[in-house]
Image 1 (cartoon, rainbow, N blue to C red):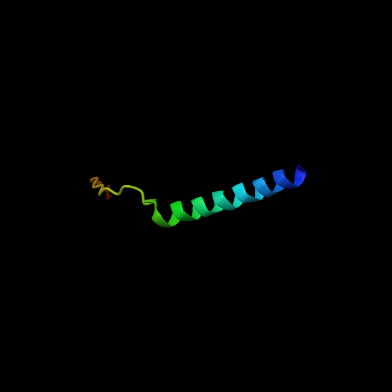
Image 2: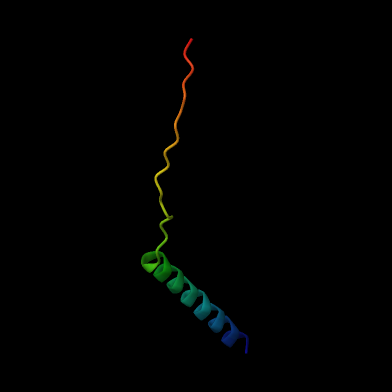
Amino acid sequence: MMARLIKLLIFLVILGFIGLLGFAYLGDLRPAQTDVAEPVTLETN
């Protein structure tokens, strides 16, 4: 009984790792980019 639980746990870990790799390679992990323009005033003495 304990051996079956260990095999199931190993199987779930491997399946989770494969899912993580698939998401990392196929998922869109890039953040949305926008241009930001803000005027800057420099005080000169």
